[in-house]
Every structure is written in structure tokens, then in C-alpha cells.
Length: 361
Image (cartoon, rainbow, N blue to C red; front, side, top):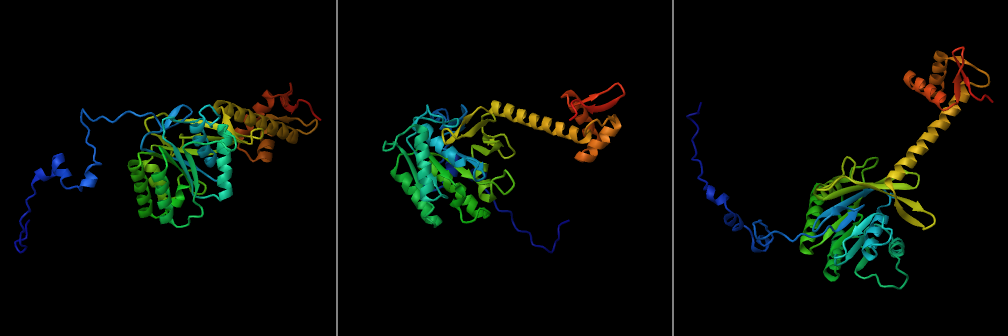
């Protein structure tokens, strides 16, 4: 019920026309912003452009989009950046499955973390991967180490100066965490994401960055990592797989590859070539499975020898108890191990229903 003691105020009249129609909306926008507003019709379909980067034959980055590779130190993220640039210099080389469109005007790599020596070594590995000899021209590829440019505002200016003065269609930012003062500051993270988007429009480029994950996680570090990955076209993870083999995949909790299927590729360290080389992911899976099977067999043989030493014989229930005691496993697991020991020929069941070593020492 209305309170008669409260004075009623008239409801302001809002003309709905001012909120409808593109001309009304655009009339409220500054001219320099208005030119960037795109309203599609039948006459202004954008030109279809090829994918900027492919991995394993699948497009992961297209025109004016951003992409991200999450990786812990030592997982191969810098090697991946070198391989992307090398694929532009020599598509026929072993580029870890990466392929950059050859119509790209050029590539700029910005390394925010490593020393000048490390950056030069990266330059050298890129050239060696592409088959470029010492002294040869590398065309429109430029690497810039910004570790000594300590202040963020100066680093931003250097990156824009590089883009102003070099042909570029692809900007690779190795160590995007150094583009903010605090990766956990949301306002800085949003500003960084907006700045990256502005670069893609202003310079007509695509951007691919590397990010560190949170400790013990595959999630990109801080608000900054989350903001970049939220807008990114693809989010990949580089991680160890088995032995010297590593994988790059979009098939993880925080991964994506917009408008394309999930993908996983593999690469491994080669002592012969002194760098990472491409590996077949299916072969890597099979090799890892074989290694795990061999390890399980060896463990099973050792366990059988431990619980059935010499001429010792046990009934099934006794053997189950002995395995549970030695390996601290559950009853169901102990029974599975007995079946495996028997199938692999490490133990045999006699006519007396007792189990013995097949070849006792």
C-alpha cells in the first residue's frame, strides 16, 4: 500500500528512440572511435584470410586474434617460439609441427625474460633450425630482448616502436607476465588485454604469447593469465610427456582452439641435432605404454620373488595376504597381481592348489 506521507516523484520520460537505431548510437561516439565500429551488411563481408599459424596442420591463430601457450620453465615454450619463426623462414624445416602463413609481412619476437646471451642463443637456434648459415639474411624476422628495459611503460613504448618501424603480421611475446607490474592485479590485467587487442587493430597483426601457470597447476598465472586466455582464440599447454618427449595440447581443462578440433602434438630432445625435433604423438603414446607395461612386469617379477622365496608354496588366500602385506595394496589389487604373475609366467599353480615360483632361484 502506498504511504500518503511520501511525496510521489514523476517518472522521467525516456524516449525509446534514442536507444534504437545505429545512427542514434553512433552519434554518441567520438569520430575516431566511430570508424572502428563494424556493422555487417551484404556488401561489407571481410576478406577471408588464411590462418596465421597452424600446428600439426590445424589452424590455431587467425588474423587479428591472440593465442597463448602455457608452460612451466623448461617445458619448451621458447623452443616453440623459435620454431614458429623458423617455419616462416623455412617451411620445409623441422619446425615442431608449426607452420606460419608465407603471406605474413614479417615476425617480431619480444623476449621479456632472458639475458642477452640467452636471446642470442635463441636467435642462433632459430636460424640453425631453419637451415640459415651464419651471416645470411633472415629477412623480416626480428628478435628483441627487453630484459634490460626494466620499466613497464618503457617496455610498452619499445614494443610499439618495433611495430612502427618493421614489417610485421605476427607478434610473438615470450613472457607476457612482464607486461604488467602485478599478474594478480585485475585492473592491470584488463588493461593489458585491451592493449593487446588495440595492437592487433592498430598494426593489423596477430599476437601469440607465452604464459606461466600457477604453481602445481595448468591454470594460467594470475588475473593477467586469465584475462589473456579468456579472449584468446587458442590456449595451448606445453608439458613433459615421457622421458625426453614433451607435448603441446589444447586438450586440457583450460585449453581451447576456437572453431577447430582439439589437437595434441609431440616433440623430443635430440642429442644428435642438439635441439628439440618433432615426434609422432601416437608413437609416443605407444612407447609410454610399453615402458609402463615393462615396469609393471619387472615389479611383478620382483614381488613374486619376494613373497615366494625359494621353494615356498602358498594357497591363494595366503598369497593374497602376503602381497597385501608387502605392497600395502587392497585385496582386489592383490588378486589382480596374482593373475598377472601367472599370465606372465612368474608363478605357477600346482595340482595341490598352491602357488610357487616358476623358476625358483
